[in-house]
Each structure stands twice: as C-alpha cells, then as structure tokens.
Length: 251
Image 1 (cartoon, one colour):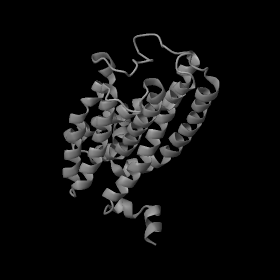
Image 2 (cartoon, one colour):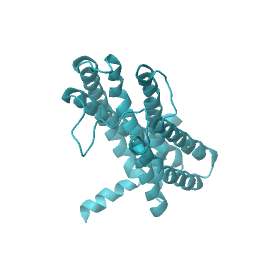
Image 3 (cartoon, one colour):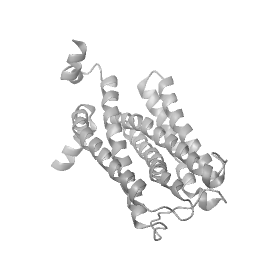
Image 4 (tube, one colour):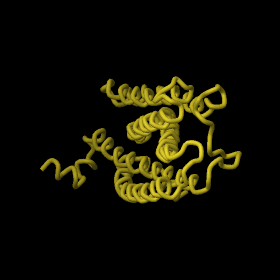
C-alpha cells in the first residue's frame, strides 16, 4: 500500500514537476548516445543491400520514426482516456506535451519515406494506403494541437482534444495492417513478433538501437515540454510561485 500510495502521488503536477526535471537529462543523454551508436552501425557497419543498394540506409531513420509516430499517438490516447475517466489534470498535460513530438516523427517518416520512394518506386509520393494513412496521422496530430489552441478554457479543450485523439486512434491499426489489407507499393514488415527477421542481424541491431534512441528522445522531449505546460497551467498555484526558476524570471 505504501508503494502504491508513493507512486500515485506523482499524479499531482506539483510532485511530477521536479521528477520530470530529474529524468530529462538521463533520457536526453541516453538518446544522444544511442543515436550515435545506431547511426554508426547503420551507415558505416551495415552492408549494402543487394536489391536497393545504399539508398536503403534511410530505413534506420524512417522506420523508427514511423514506429514512434504510431506509438506516441496510442500513448496520447491512453492518457486521454485516463483524463476523461478520472478527470486528472496531469494526464491531459502529458497528452498535450507528447503531441508535437509525435507530429515531428510523423513528418520525418513521411519525409524520409519520400526520399526512399524516389529510387525505389520512381516517385517521391504515391497515394499508397500506408502513406495516405500516415499522412492522416500527421493531420490528426496537427488537428489535436489546433483544437487545443482554439479553446480558451483548459477543461473544455482537454475534453475536446481527448475525444479527438481517442476517435483518431482507429487510424493506427489501419496504418499497421494496411500492407496486409490492401495491395500496396509499400513493402511488408521486416520485423515481426511472429516471424524471423527478414534482414541481416547488424541491420536489425542498428534499427533497434535507433528505435531506442527515438524512444528516449520522445520521453525526454515530452518531460521537458510537460514542465512548461505545468508552469503555464498552474501559474497561480502557490507551489509554482515558490519555485527558484520562477522567482528568477520575475526578478
């Protein structure tokens, strides 16, 4: 009971704010170190692909970005469900903090996919099922942020944005299963939980390291951003006015 009570006390913005500050450097430096290792493995150690040549190396950025874009949206949906059911302020703040990072990963996945598609398909863009559903995911992220900005009352914006995220989460399985449900140009999954990998071990290792780097970066960015969100939304709370950094800004 003591452990559970200690865990749930971090659901308070006042308790979570200093914890987030302590965690940001750990995840930030981990992301940087993993990215250096992953890029070195992917661009200098992994062999040239016998079909796609050197152009395939963009997958070490493209695939982790696509995975993170989908994963972050599902995490946002989870926070939104918690926010609607228990009316917790921090849950809505976490969803708000995750959105820009998710949008960035969705954009990077589309951008790198375009550069991968040019030598592979002969075009930067095709109205492929996976590409189109990923573009919709980017619009969902942008729509979430625009909706929040358009409503002045924080509680109303929390509820409206949460409903948008939850309804839009149906797009994530569409992205994932699109290559199975429709005849698309996009290649099938190279990594599956139910089948052996379709790539060399060093290629898979580089991709997984880059995925962990993207994961650590997303956590660091979200924690850093949620601290700003907390300060903005809790500006009138006594504990915020007592923070050293807030006192320095006012002086």
